[in-house]
Length: 118
Image (cartoon, one colour):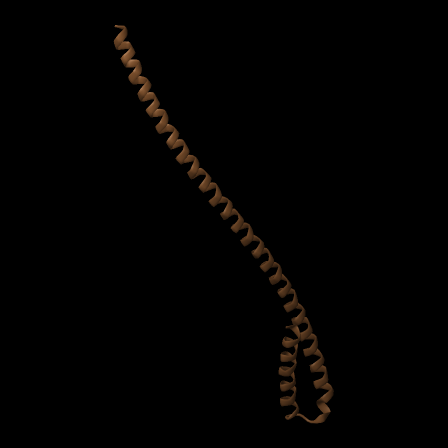
């Protein structure tokens, strides 16, 4: 990728130089070579900055992937917990109904026995 960027920038510089050469004579070629050297240095510095930015971007993507994976794991765990809690709620509801029926039956027997003792 950096080679592509470098070659594109080099072509742009060459077109600038070619256009400039058509308006100047050969005596200015040393001056143009100096310009080319400066442009090459600027391109190399730009490429280094681009490379550093790409490295940062790759780190960011890696971090983002890690966060997304963690989020998926958390969501799966949350869903599991919700299912467990729902099952526990049903069990507790059934147990409560059974206990209410048992209390009702025992209350009924207690009332009957009190009635027979008097």
